[in-house]
Image (cartoon, rainbow, N blue to C red):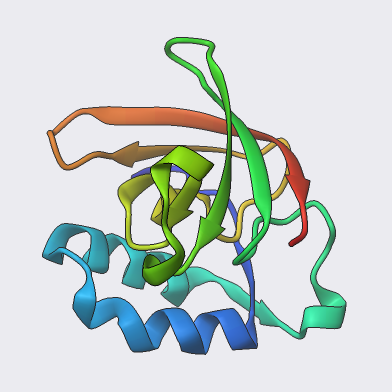
Length: 125
């Protein structure tokens, strides 16, 4: 992944996500661990309202299909596709954490394809 966007994650989210990494598929765990390793850690009070955090709802656009989608980023036990709740351990969940509105990222999926997305809105949960 080249030209990676800067990430911002709260200390609390960082520690909770780190604790559950062992439950992720190896490829997702490795990518998520890399994301966490390059993130700037902040307190909850320092987190901007335009940054994707745990339990926030994020709207993003697939840059290949131009389709917009809104999901709530959650922990695995709260994931529910019918309610658009996506686990942090899912490839798209791992890609979104820490991004700011306007940032883009290319993220490999488990089927070998690469998804190119841009964050367009964030609502904190």
